[in-house]
Length: 172
Image (cartoon, rainbow, N blue to C red):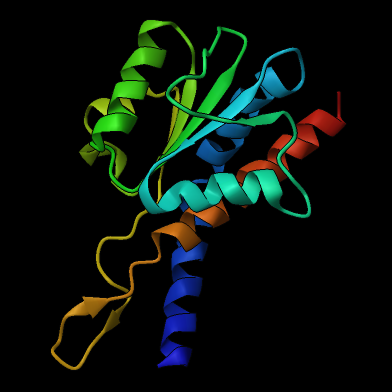
């Protein structure tokens, strides 16, 4: 079972790398608009994807210029936000997207839904990166699909964004 998990997880990450490279680069450039100058970068992470913010703040190599986001943070036009949410229709994530859009603050979104299925969220976002987990990676004894590694895949996307972001900041 571990070999199957490893194979399926590797396939998922390879698919993200192959299909989302441009969106990842664009998201990194968007965040670097704040990171390279006087703005602040915020990650608004919902549900289990809150692990992304914790990692970005506390890891051995933290995300530069990142501050914790809460509903009480006042985001300005020089700041940039990346929303991480399992579902594009998550109410708090969608409310934040509307708030940012209405304030003309460009933001990125990482969500599981394909862009064409993400509805309002994809339309409001400057960049949108789908995680792309359609069903569980492995079958169980009952024939059901299990193992939905949303956090693992989102962390991979985060690391890809961070690589590009750090490269942009180093070149300035």
